[in-house]
Length: 203
Image 1: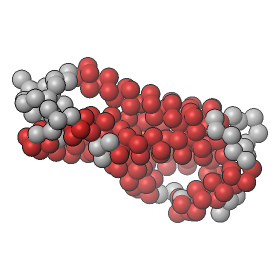
Image 2 (image 1 turned 135 degrees about the vertical axis):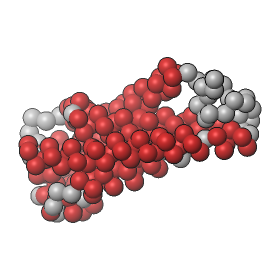
Image 3 (image 1 turned 90 degrees about the vertical axis):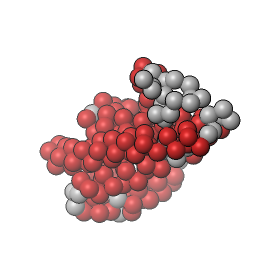
Image 4 (image 1 turned 30 degrees about the vertical axis):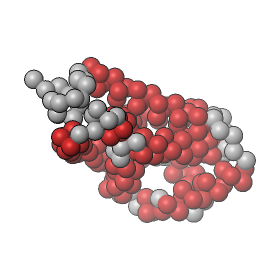
């Protein structure tokens, strides 16, 4: 039975389900760590305002009308790029850090709220869905990069064998983020959103 990560029986080191889950867990921990670093980055008042103004302009349609597909498409466009071998891992790290910086900027506008408290986002249903999607994409970027960089693995058969897992896992990521878009819209409608309230002031 073939259990290699790319579905190819030649040269590829066997990765059991346990090891694949291990890479996924590492991806999640790294994303959270980079996100936390962003939340702990001190920003001046001017830097915070510039960042919040840029974010408000980017998500303007969401501020005016709750649209679950707008949220989903925005997150999907970020996540799918994370599958790119090698670059995707770097891109995911950048996205995590930038998100943390945004939390740091918001913390400057919310009395009694510290940036590191933003980690609580990832124990919400939306946070769990998004973290799962990003961790899966980033871990696959790293694994696929190994195939391309290591000469013993870099065969035509192995490279072709990466296509099926990429398509399957991309579909999983898209599904997670579409569900996340609808859940986030429902949560905002039901409970409101301090972050959107802050961003409305920077439109």
